Image (spheres, rainbow, N blue to C red):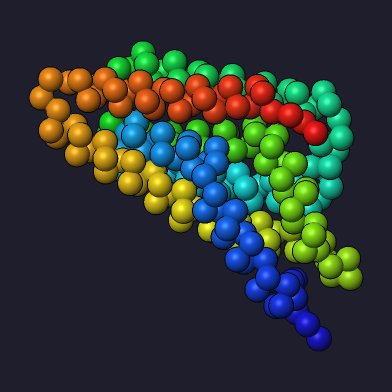
Length: 211
């Protein structure tokens, strides 16, 4: 009796496909890089952890059939989309208001994780992606929810390491620039770039083509 929720051959096919998607620059990678620029490497890793947990939550929702309801109901889709865009824009404004040195490595450790989780959960594009990509590998003869969770775990694990690395590299860049920045000019540019990343992600959500 096969106790695995997913056929091994299917899983071995899914892993490289998922890794290729994880390596493709997207909103999650940009967000984690923005968090790294904002508050250092550790913040980038925490943001990536929040994004990964959000991805697993989306997989759970899709496996329970709730994701399909959201995807097929325009009002629910729009509410999630506009809330997510508003939250990203609020983050951009907070960065600009804090200015140089307003938030560094000493900031609340849970904040990047929380922001990553909320940004991922309020991105309806992730819901649509899970519903479009994962079912291609689902075997109806096996427990559907267990398969969604298994595939979601693969996506979340790969995303955690790749997005976290992007955030950590951005954080190291921020640290080096801050050490060499005697005039504060580089620091101001880091603030603007960080805010610009979040504002761009907000605009991206606003312009999402639901189809």
